Image 1 (cartoon, helix red, strand yellow):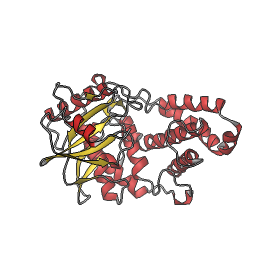
Image 2 (tube, helix red, strand yellow):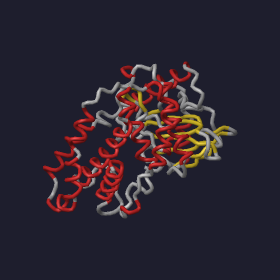
Image 3 (cartoon, rainbow, N blue to C red):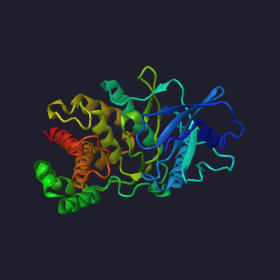
Image 4 (spheres, rainbow, N blue to C red):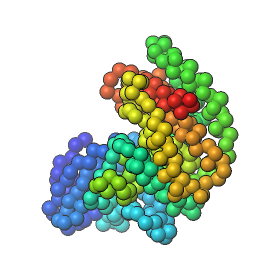
Length: 341
């Protein structure tokens, strides 16, 4: 539901009771939450409505964020953090009469977000920034952080969803996807091997795409790691793997022409070097020895999720054309296979 400016001002007044002259600018880089830049006199803030379909427990997100920001400040983390503002009722979320949840956070001026890595220097910088974020969270026990989306990076769970989709899918879609189904089944032994690794549970970001780094306007310096909504216990291979998956491809995720999909090894080298430059000294031998395979697993599981959704008639990922999820699955499988070569 699109809100009027008056409705938005009424929401802001729960954070700034005396606010009068406010201007609102929609921010469109995110795909989950509805976000605005709010200008109040000479100050700017971010106003955001949480998507409770994706995040049914917004209070858990805010509890996690408070623990993370408190820990980062105690460790003298050298970058900007997402310190949420409190409402006049001393809470971090304002709940409307329609059960919408809103929060306000600082707006960082003179920064930009990128949708794609433009060069290896950006890949190195972003990977180092994510690694440094994890480095400073290393002393925060994972058991103190709440699970926001159960089984988010659980490959065994994603395989069970895929197996169920195979049983229930219609014949037409099974026929269209027969090659991709075979490719994924052939990779099951790889997933089984990865599931046996003894990986420590850590506090991880779980959405380490390039657009979740705020860069300075020159696109050279990382200012902040943003979008903390999926911070929860996980493995460091998942965060590294999502960096690789999103930084190292030459094409959009739904590119149909697979000849345009290239796994860029020079970008991978930059990501690995940047990531290890900050968090590397904290990794176990098992983590370090399986970084590349961890990235391959993330890519394969994403292919399996896209294909599962295609077989289930596109009920999870938004599609704008017929077969888009199948194209996404083919795209990710191409990356997976190129990494294997």
